[in-house]
Image 1: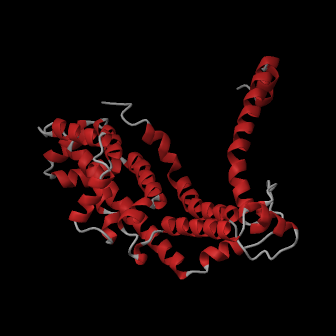
Image 2: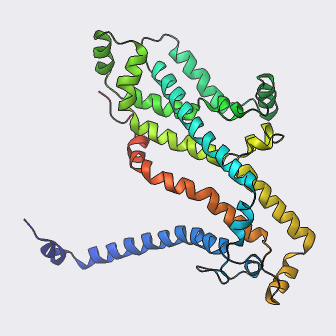
Image 3: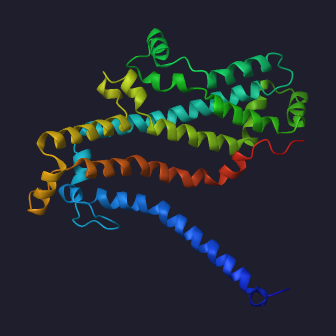
Length: 309
């Protein structure tokens, strides 16, 4: 067996040059990717008035927790956080279940209407009715200012349906046939046979749904803006940002705030720059925590349908 030292000695100068270029290129891409995120963290922990002057790179000039205190001093933010968490969990579970069950039904060769129904679903993905018809539909269904408006319209995502159905089509038909011979009905086949085999695609679409549900605020603005108890975290943070911008424009412009900062004015005031950075961190960190747990399924999930029996 060739030792590691021997392999290093056999490498030519061209190999070393090539590896060095690749390493430096990847290092540059990592720095370009990480720097904006790290800079946002630094701004979020920096004094609001001092942030207006700019020049903050990798470390805050004036440490403060005031930006986060302003956001969390109101109990409504915690209520909005609870709404977003429960909405994300319930919507993810319900959407994954309904989408995967529909994908299994329309993947069966013996289902005579599968081609027509699949075509209709795919067309609906490309041709949308528009904002006003959607709002009228939600109103007719009695979902305005109801918690169910976060769940019911998002039970099935067509793009996720296509991904899961393609994955199921790549599974051997012998699994389903043997289960039917043993007397299993369609739901038992789906629950006990198909569902455990499509975990990679399930994990992938679960992350898609969870990220979309967590970051969503426009549906709150359209359907639940009149009921404070149903405001999501993203919608509440958007309100904080707008309020901070309005206060900034009504009190003074950016130049006067910079002058106040340089003259040693009180630093208890937050600014749009600092509050925006804090909001970004609050909205991003939960997804960063969840992502590593499903990352291992991404390669498998994105190559669905590549192998067939």
